Length: 173
Image (cartoon, rainbow, N blue to C red):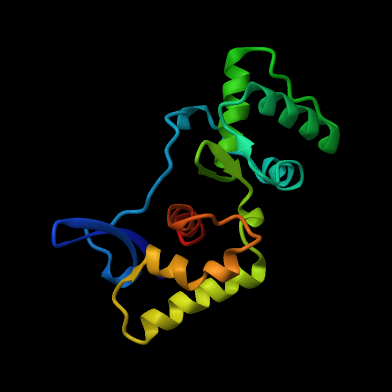
């Protein structure tokens, strides 16, 4: 694991970038995407939630949508033959929290990790970063990385450098 997120200040401008893990010090931190509802998560397997996101919400699950929550529960129950019951507010919050934590949250939507980029693009992206750091780069800026892979991202779900940052923070933690 070689990556960490960083805020780099140069000439009074803060820019987010990627740095090799060995350069991580007290000021370098990962983005967490904390929803404030961590205490609602039961530590269990979220793969079923991720699979429903991948198969039934290709354009993302709207995190604040009661309709998407109802659709998610319906799909989950159909696929897994179980009865997720959202009869009370606490249970709805738990289900919603599990959905949020089973994917990547961006722009009010939750995406299945595997729906954002193809395996080929993911491999090229990580190889590019490895190569850059092994050739002496100390920092790779998200903006520059997004511009480098802009053509690769066409037809996929990485829309801007912020979404790329969110994706890489998840993949490289």
